[in-house]
Length: 474
Image: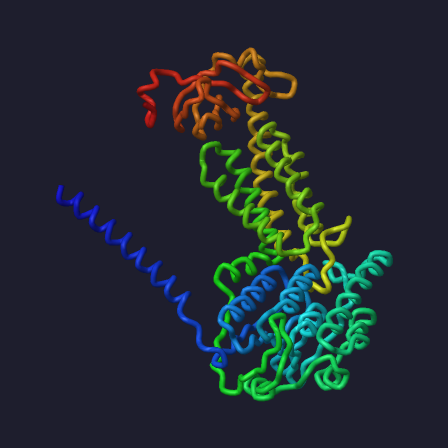
């Protein structure tokens, strides 16, 4: 009793400690905000604009509003991103009740394409010396020019959006519209002279000094900024946001889909193994989560699903490699089409660079699948060759294709080489067959069984001997 009581007390102590940890986390997250005039929030946004970035900016704006912060500074350096995500960010900035400044920095940074819309939508637009803004002409998800009719529609929509932003923020609508229609780009000095931005600053302290005392109009009314000596608090991406953005890489998304599919195929090869199936489902779920943050093409997804179906058929009906070759080809084609603009694709991004699966990744995954298919084909061929030899030596109990005739298989005995759960692999002489237990119970490796039925290439077998002698059965 003493050891059991000690275990219960230890478990209770651990649970209590975890509860205290959770409560302390809540207390930290709900700590009182500093008084107005003491807080400036800073958020760094780099690389491509996607749904994750849109959620991060929305969270930062909400936090600034909740803390009644003097200012939220978004330091921006991006080549562009998804058009849908860009519109979400623009809506967030135009509706922001806390002052927001977008600062294109450091020196040499860019607010390309989608970044132009985001910078223009802020209450205050600033740039560092040596940075640039513009080139917002819409292109396809693969970075190519889009068709004339679709290009006209998308360009007109983007031009109307950026003019609306300019009118709302009092910026030069004509100059900003040219970034969409002619891919115009401006240096920091040219942008200031053209009234695209409000000021140029060397760094964040220089920016805060320049903004001190300035009045901005927010969705909640006018605010006079007092930021010269403010406490700057940084907002960072949360771990789950970083994780989602990490898997939202085209190569990783393709690997997750491929590994998930291969996991399901392995589960079919070894029924009841559970591990490959669970891993496969998890990988597929993460893969589709990643696709939600990328401009993917449904045609590519369809080819990947077809590859899984062909691989499964290769296992179930033993296509001697033909179905497996089709699976490999389908998987590679799916990888090529997954992030292309072929056949309509997904939404049109304003500029989402390098959205494609690496040929090295395609070759590696295709090679793994090809090796697996080759092994299955080899086993099937050797099995049939063994059947022909057995037929020649033993009086000819084989069909014309070398497979043992169904009538001669009934009553034959064999050994389980891959556990039946209830399906697995059974060896009959020199042949390997897919087998299933007649009563649905599991049969371990090494157990002798008798064939009681044949359905194509699937044998129905029963255990030879009493069930109570089978290890693991009750």
